[in-house]
Length: 449
Image (cartoon, rainbow, N blue to C red; front, top):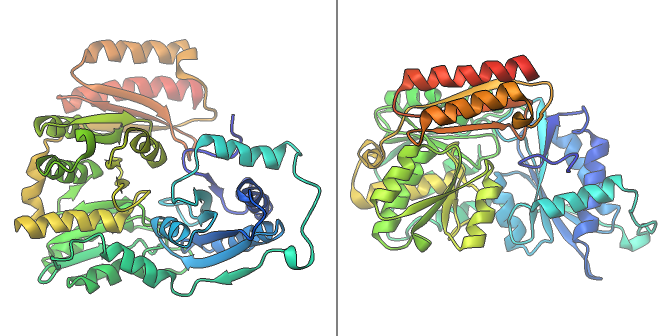
């Protein structure tokens, strides 16, 4: 069992265990040790979002890594997928992202990429923890010129802007399109407007004045109604809402209608099936994606495979099966032909390319998918016990599964980053599934709240 790592790295309130500078330094030493395999000079990339605590954790990580004789390349605020790209393109040994994604500014997190730009598997995370907690670290510490050094990559933003633009078809431009983009005062505040502007769009950016405390604060993908309002005000063709680290996107059509990641995947997957470019005719998504997405892909001649929640589990399944499109309802979309992790900017560009090619409004493209009613209830819990080892909860879960009898879906799971139990239900009757969700949630609250 891992002690620190959740579904997406280590996360918590900054300056409170485990998100302390002491743990950050230990993680730095551990990641350097794990990836320092051959007797040569090694390098690790570190990037972050715009949180105030990023300075503290960044310096601690640098100290830990350099103490193990590994060099550090600092890129500053850059979207998570940008750090994955820089890690891979510069042939670094690993990448570190200091970010708590969509969480409020007082939280922070640390997650890692391997040298090929993919998030670390559970096995490597367990190895990192073993180094930290099992007292098996080597007694030898580098001295003199063998100690690592840190330096900045000044052109990281420019490198990533060029990379993102190159995922958009070269024969197309965004000339004449009006784009409203909300960067959540986060890691994409510089690069996102620049990418869309350089491709020819009229860009109306908001959430581009980070102060260390306003990341995700009433803006970004958690509050898509903000960019929806801007779309209407500016008569924009599309609204793009990114989260704090830029790896997820929520789109808004020209009417101000908010769309989920499922809509985005339906639009792209059905076109790829038509063009015979969706590998193995398969879309990889999670247990949270709507039944309507599955119906749309099936009607277009494809199929979907579901994984546990977490874009790294989606990526692992894609690699295992050789698939090239996958993602989450929350807006983490992976285009394996372009990226190794979720990328909000690149995901938006793929939909924009379809809009331009087909000369259609975004609202016209969404007719691809019929969305079934879905309800998600979050319950605060004091501890995370196996639901099926608690009779009162287990019996209600089984009761609802029997009632659904194939005409809906039920998922009961714990959040990987918060002390929450999540009850998700889908079906044809909105009132009925809300009642069912509350029925299960009340048992969880009574037993674990």
